[in-house]
Length: 191
Image 1 (cartoon, rainbow, N blue to C red):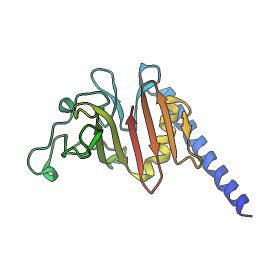
Image 2: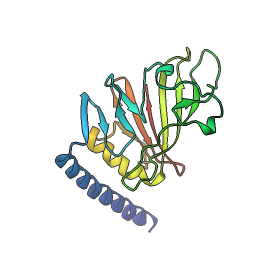
Image 3: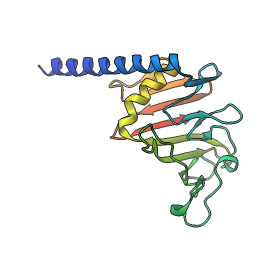
């Protein structure tokens, strides 16, 4: 009986995702919603995935490999009052990858005007000058629609976990991961 209920729930989830996927695929056909950069790298409408002026894939405006000072200066003054993109002090061991929270970013909004990104973290390489990872927390209800949009743009994920709570797209030297576990939806761009 328990297995039957799980199967029914799984079929309902797949049906909802297929229907949403068909609607989004139709929207992709009739509106320009993705811009090709190179094999596998696109800006995707309705997600925080974009492109910078160098045609590098970005997450909420931050590109991997970019010098941190070019895209995110350290915050001056009171971080909670920041109105421009900046990062808090880097934490972690010297000579290892380090991370910092990002504040002052202009949170993109969805069609209803709700903020898309609600939190953000960056990681740097051991030299503290180059961005090697970017993570953004998005509203939990954006998980499935974002999964469908990313799958429509990039094709099936390269890997998923057993319960489809996490999906990863490998794109050359970059990896894009959408993780819907633990009550949050987090999207990460990394090497």
